[in-house]
Length: 220
Image 1 (cartoon, rainbow, N blue to C red):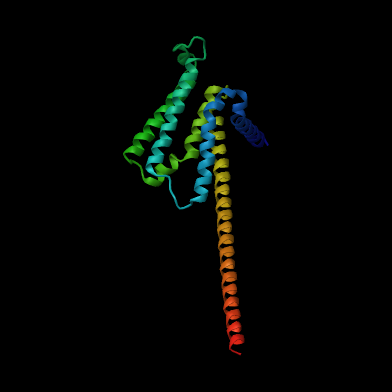
Image 2 (image 1 turned 90 degrees about the horizontal axis):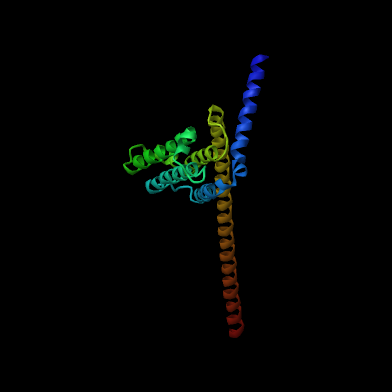
């Protein structure tokens, strides 16, 4: 069927674009210097919230995550400026799509910063939008597009959404597994402590019983 052929072509395009996004650091290793902190932050925060499941993000952390987008935007503009040697402001005109992406990241960072600072949005909305994964993944996709030749089109946007869902599921599973392991470890420690208490109590009773026997022997 014609629609099956079209659907298969679109699917192959999305998979290809998804792989391009994932392999972007290998295409331009220079971007590794800026994405390394982003990846490290996501990993650390995943394990942190896996351990402390009752904690939430916090307005101050949301503001800090918003600033990340500003730092990334500044780096993107720096990269575009230095595409030629010496650097030239004309590079922004030559790479106007990438320049708009950098400005878009900066605009989003400023908008989220002000929104969080004045608590304009409901807490659960702001905390989700400004959590490490959405913020850092947006930054990563923008970096991948600017630093490489990945096209900025609908396929890239859909591939980015697919990558977000994949990472969200993976991080959720990691947090649940980590929490389960910590609970089991705590239960094992408590069981070990109870066992030590029982052994200590049995030892105490045995000593008391031995003392009673010695007293009886002394009386007799």
